[in-house]
Amino acid sequence: MTEIIRTEGVVLKRRDFGETSRVAVVYTRDAGKVQLLAKGARSPKNKYGAALEPLSRDEFVFYWRESKELFTLSETSPLRPGRFIREDAKALPYGLAMAEAVDKLSGEGDADPRLYELLASTLEALDGGGPPAPLLAQFLLKLAARLGLKPELDKCAACGRVRPADGVALVLKDGTVVCRACEPASGEAIAISPATYNFANALTTFEPRRLRRVKAGPELVEQTLSFIRAHLHYHTGLEIKSLTLACYS
Ligand SMILES: [Zn+2]
Image (cartoon, rainbow, N blue to C red; front, side, top):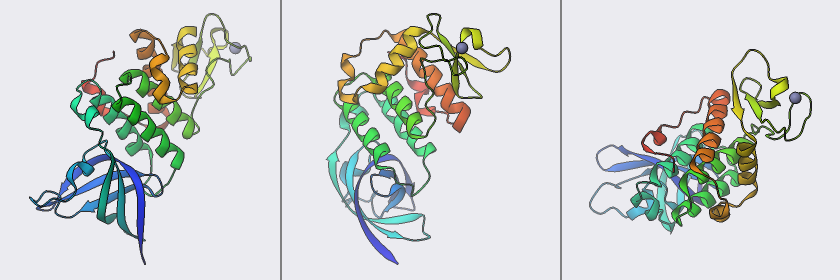
């Protein structure tokens, strides 16, 4: 049975297909991650324009068929071209990192409209000139929460002490934080300073578009990014390759 689906989505990545076509991997609001075959997208009469560029947000109409992996794209209409991000060498790796994380951590066809809204609103904030590294840190913290992996940051999971003055440690194998007194003798743990967990907690309460108001030095942002990436890597295997070219700022 074929079903026509019309939904908005964000292009995560794309690849060439055959002589003249392209496949776009799109995270859609209503159908989750899908692979869309855009016939003739590389021919001179390409009707898709910028709609298939990575990080573009468009409305997609495609033919969904059960037991198929590749769905034929029928039409697109642009919602937000993501052009600024693609033209900004500083913002681009962060935007691509968000797309890469969603691509690697979501199964095909698993729809999660809240994850879609998170991705779309974060890219919109980045496109509007929002701070790239804090936006990525916020995105990964919220993504971990969507996956049920967000550790409680300011309370010791062992003794219950709240906001210990000497900071906490993230015990990677448990995915929990403990105070320095309860820190296990063995096992990989990452020290998190009070400034870092306060910053990380603040990030999770802000809307992406309001992130400019959160003031933090690059070191704090880097520490936050570093522990959330280590946490996600430990529990999901996620490695973000798009960030190789980025420098924290
Ligand atoms: Zn404790």
